Length: 259
Image (tube, rainbow, N blue to C red; front, side, top):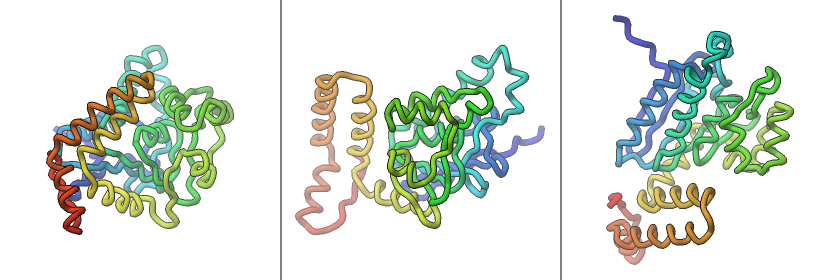
C-alpha cells in the first residue's frame, strides 16, 4: 500500500514544536491536509514538555491560500458532513491547545488559511504580506473566521472584511490587532525568537493565562474573577513559583519544571 504524502510536518526544537504545512505552493486546505493537521495537533496536545507551538507555511509561497475550490462541487449537498463539521473540529483543536501558539505568516493567509492563523494565540506577519477573507468574491463565507475575527477587531471591521473581501496589508493588520508582530525579513525567524522567550517563562502560568483569557470571552466578570482566584492558587502551589522567586534573589535565570 502506498504511503500518503506528508502534507503536514511536525518538528520539535526542545520545548518548542513547529507545525509546517506542506500541501503545494499555496498550501490549500484539503480534507487530506486537515486530517494530518488534526493528527499533529492532537499529538502535541499530549506532550506536556512542549511549551510553545509555531504554525507556518514551510517552503510554500503562501502560509495558506484557503480551501481547494475543486472540492466544493462534489460535496454540495453534504458539505456539513464532508467538510464543515470536520474542519471546525480541527480549528477548535488547534485553538484549544493548552500551550501558547504562534502563526508565522511569511506568505498570504487567505480564507481558510487566515482562519487557521486566527486559531493561534499570536500572529507574526512578514512585511508586505496580506491577510483576509476573499470568500465573498465566490459567494462563499468564512464562517469560523467571522466569529473569531470579530473578537479581535470588533463587528464593524469584521463586517468590512467579510462584505468586501479586501485583503488587509501589514500595517493595517498590525493597527487593527490582526497581527502582534511585523517582521521585515522572516516571520518564522521572529516567531522562533518569540517562542524562545515564551518557552523560557513559567509553563504553568502561561497555560493558565491562556485559559483565563479564553474563558473571559464567554463568561460574566465575576465568574472570570472566581476562575482567576483558583488559577492563582494553582500558581502558588507550584514548584515553578518557588523556583522563580529563588532565581530572582539569586540573580540567575529560573529553570522551570512545569510542576
